[in-house]
Image (cartoon, rainbow, N blue to C red):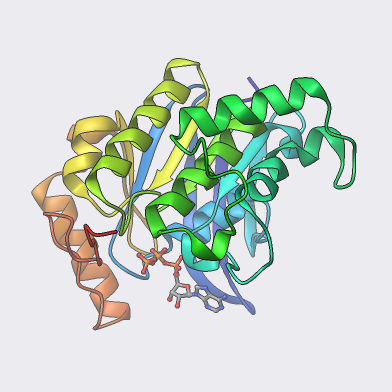
Length: 254
Ligand SMILES: Nc1ncnc2c1ncn2[C@@H]1O[C@H](COP(=O)(O)OP(=O)(O)OP(=O)(O)O)[C@@H](O)[C@H]1O
């Protein structure tokens, strides 16, 4: 199935130094999984590898079908260059490039899809706003509209709900649930343990290696969370992560 992703003894890292060790397991087609763990435990590294922007040091990632067509990747917002002179329409229309090419003509059908995407994220009226003028929540809505346009079988989201207001979180959670309902495979890095328990049926708990992977209630146990903290603290003393999910900055304003 093209939406399934298998990790086969995967070791990931930078400049030859491993950051995440020996991951094996499968995200099944149509599953919706949270990737959780303390700061520095390797969550973003894993997502980058699945997205194909980081090459494994060892092992492999197996996905049937054409990966490029099949995947949408939303990096952490901090990685988006907001100084780039683009407006909301430019940013969202990038979701079409896999289908149209970077400078391909955008047809009437595409414009309709773009309008529908802006509508779905509540950004009608923001088409010509420069991305440097958007609040954090508005930017995240625009990035979700871009993912919508990509129409991908696999959707990778890196901390999609961190530091955005509650209304935006609830709207965007609705979109993620819609994608899940459409049979897409969703994998999201999250810091809010409560949200994970409420929304995500599957969880992968990382601490530089796999601590648990399976149904959320069997993985997010007190014992596993305690183990995961202990393991990353052994690597990095500055790795707080609390069961309430507020170890990471989680502001509620804009
Ligand atoms: N570009 C890079 N070059 C070198 N090391 C890196 C790079 N990116 C991440 N690392 C290291 O890899 C390890 C895992 O980092 P990663 O960003 O994947 O963790 P994370 O679980 O996503 O953390 P957080 O919750 O803080 O976002 C960390 O020790 C980090 O310092």
